[in-house]
Amino acid sequence: MSAALQDPGPPPARQLILNGIFTENPVFRLALSLCPAVAVTTTVMNGIILGVAVLLVQVLSSATVAIARSFIHPRVRIPVYTIIIAVWVSAIDMSLAAFVPTLYAQVGLYVKLIVAFAIIISRLEVFASRYPLVPSLWDALGMGLGFLFALVVIGAMRELLGNGSLFGVALAPGKPLLFFALPAGGFFSIALLMALFNWMERRAAEAAGARARAAGGSHA
Amino acid sequence: MPRSSQRALIGAGIALLFFLLLFPATRVHAAAPGQAIRAARVQREGLVRLRFAQPLERADAANFRFTEVAAPDVPIPVREVRVEAGNVVTLVVGQPLDPEGSYRIELAEPPLARAVRPPRWALLFSAVLSAALINNFVFTRYLGLCIFFGVTKKRDTALGMGATFTFVMITTGMFSWMMYQFVMKPLQLKFLQILVFIGVVAFLVQLLDTVLKKTHRALHEKFGIYLVLITTNCIILAVPLLNAAADAGPLESLALAMGSGLGFALALFLMSCARERMELARVPASFEGLPIAFALAGLFALAFMGFSGLSFFR
Image (cartoon, rainbow over all chains, first blue to last red; front, top):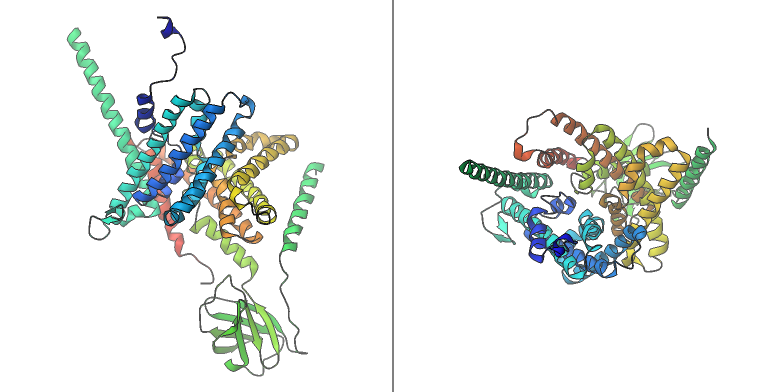
């Protein structure tokens, strides 16, 4: 009883991860950090590279902030977070340039721009600066996976429709709808996927409402 | 005129002078008495236009030697010499010329020589237009989308944001160019570029905010809110990163900063006009809000693809 009245503490790990992937998906639900989501997702592979880079930066900076949160004075926290993110982005940027140079050549600018992602700093501000290391890690993992998931979905859709292939393997002859591989197609793919997410949510809400009404009716 | 704006004007003048001094002056070569090349310019592909002081005596192709400054031993063949009115001679050369390259024309008789390159203002102009329209930051490079979708609900906000962004992009672009060329490159600190550029942007935005608050109260009340949002924005940060990647000169980086700022302002303005109209439209429920805005941006991107054929000189 007394435990319930106290600070509820961090939510469980499973909920944190699902939260990041579905309920608060950074791209489809929160509409944060959209620039790379449209820019690099012409193929699945590009989406994976950038998604993994974001995941790593998010996890590493969340961990850093969670560990150092008692040393960071609240008044200088935003500059400190920015510097922490910039350090990790530089590290990831250089590692990617060294290990996967051909893929990096296509997404290079956007990897550097991870430093300006609203999603990362907002997770540091909202979560990692308040909770200890382990829940912060789960939260960062959830958000990073959500971002990766979104990029892979958009990338798969655009590569399949624009180039008729997946992971560079041709599945359809020719280029079915070249439009989706073009710059403008990126905006339309995201519009369609967002609308799909909205539609699914509305369907779910309506179904829940109908069930509630049916249950209420039987009681009366 | 208040003293503060006078001081600002003097500061801007000094900055302008500084940049003008950085440009090498166009070289003018000694000429035979009487005869001289008054002007030389690369025109569209394969055309070089020369204006002489007096009518030219020998106007055959063998009289001219045309080379690229980078490869002085390999002459570019002159196919045809057209003599026009007003002492103007147009050379048709055998290969398409690079609008950004620099060339040299030499005459055997009378012995004259002159550097030939496209006019600098035209290069600047084409670089600005290219950054603003052909490679628009929003519609072809997808930068600054968060701000783009965030502030385009009302036209006034969009205009204010566009003006603030253009100004901050030019200031931070030039300042980080100086940092990169004069500090980071000599000291081999290129790997710190992300950290340094973020620092430069944050520092300048804070400085601008403070200065504006003290000197122009009304202006600060109008644009102050946007300034806070700018600090870590990908579109501001992309300009110094792109300039560093291209190792651009002062003029090029100024052109990129100015062009992309203007392009961003244009994108914000267009989008805000369209979204104000969309308020009245009946949109399918699932598409309400952001999805329809994305579709709208897609249409604009499609329209901006038409600019990809736009080019100068070529």
